[in-house]
Length: 88
Image 1 (cartoon, rainbow, N blue to C red):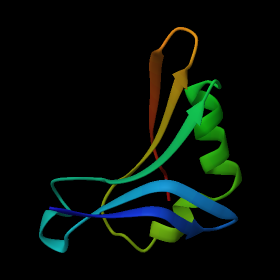
Image 2 (cartoon, one colour; image 1 turned 120 degrees about the vertical axis):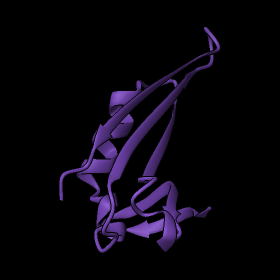
Image 3 (cartoon, helix red, strand yellow; image 1 turned 135 degrees about the vertical axis):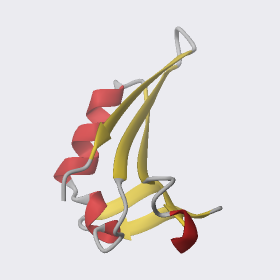
């Protein structure tokens, strides 16, 4: 259903993961630009996506794009996630 790219070269760095739906699913599923953080918050991951212009690599994608920041706290063993719509 989707193509997955790990460490996709982007505007100014590498996104951890990018998922791009196949053409026939453009209207059903968004593309995802995902940044993972360890012992930092998920909002920091979203900021990195924006600052390093990771979505530039999928701007030609005509469907929706979501920015996903996921963090893991080693002490508490908890995950946090922030998801934002990307406005082209």
